[in-house]
Image 1 (tube, helix red, strand yellow):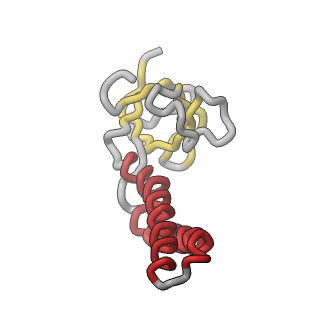
Image 2 (tube, one colour):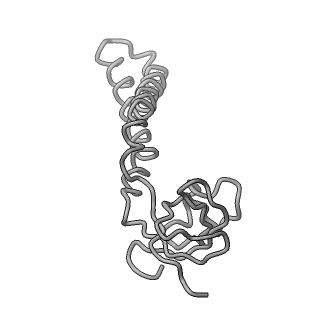
Length: 145
């Protein structure tokens, strides 16, 4: 990582006004598999705004702080996980409060999936609005080889 929020990667494909970039995983990303999708564990693939008109094979500087990339990651992964646990506790303790002690665990599991499902539905409904916002990293420079 060259600066805070900046990574160096290689353009492997161009798609419309976006570039598909291969990056080497840094320590902060090592355990997460969100961007790899079937690639080597030390490699990370992401789609970035091609602000510098980079071509396939160019070494580029990616600015992760340019976008709300971390906010988007939280919306897609963190929020459903939080609502999964929240739904479990609501179902578990709610069934106990209603006097259905024998079905606490199943009620918790059902509550978890209902809350998580509602969250994914909400994310899906907001997707079109969010496409107009910048939740994507950007190529800000072409690095000399």
